[in-house]
Image 1 (cartoon, rainbow, N blue to C red):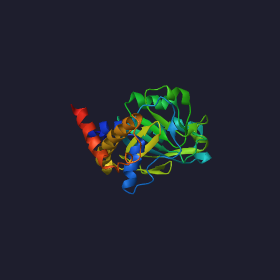
Image 2: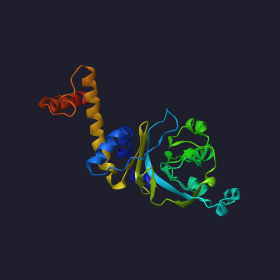
Image 3: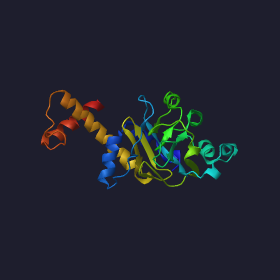
Image 4: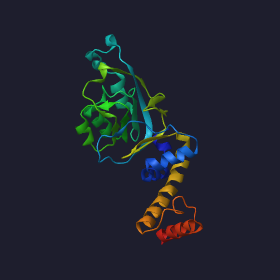
Length: 241
């Protein structure tokens, strides 16, 4: 999926959808493993992240292939991926769920931001986490990591299928991140998941306002009382006036 294939309407709906709502919508379709496990925002001030996935896969490093001099190679996969990740996309890295070695640092993440990328995710760790957290681009990882990736990981494949935090990620899948975590939406489901979640977010806002006004959750959430749907529709109609 190119960024153009993620329509402005779908992207706008997903920007308003919580990862919790997305997880529920995917679960209804039998998809239970679309949450990237073990990752959280580098900064508590993280903004919403939505964009197609552009992937990088790491493998266990072999010492004779990974001396520090390999970074002089202009085609080094880590550097190449940073320069090739399209604007509007989220760079997603399979770092073997191992944060002992860094997947990237602040200079590479800054380059992604300058190039207009929508965010970055690794199931490993980042160097310079404090600096990355101060950037105006969402970033998610397992925990901070000082050592270079060369000590344990070798960047080996750009934009192929990966597993990130036990979630299957195919290039072009839609990545959504917020303060609760990161979800992976299969590309062919993005439009319908976005539409369903837009309705879910409206209903949950209605429910929250009802609870704040003193109403019991019994019959309200889930909406088993006959008048709940009626009151919700009236609430929606009032928003349009």
